[in-house]
Amino acid sequence: MPKLFTTREVAEMFGSQTWRVRRLFEDGTLAEPPRFAGNRAIPREMLAAVLDALRARGWAAEAEVTS
Image 1 (cartoon, rainbow, N blue to C red):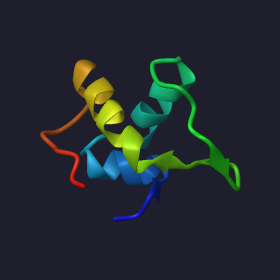
Image 2 (cartoon, rainbow, N blue to C red):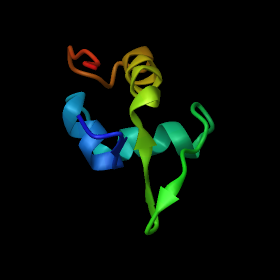
Image 3 (cartoon, rainbow, N blue to C red):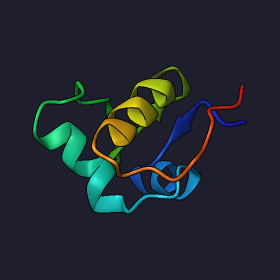
């Protein structure tokens, strides 16, 4: 499993939409991850927090973070 993920990859992984993952960072729900070439580079360690935040808003399909 890669160490860094794009917003789109995280959205696909959790059965959500890209704008919803992006919104978690834009509204301050989650701390902004580093960027690479203008894109968010979401670290693997942050995936559980992203999934929890998506679930809290009802924006995630049933998914799990795998190591």
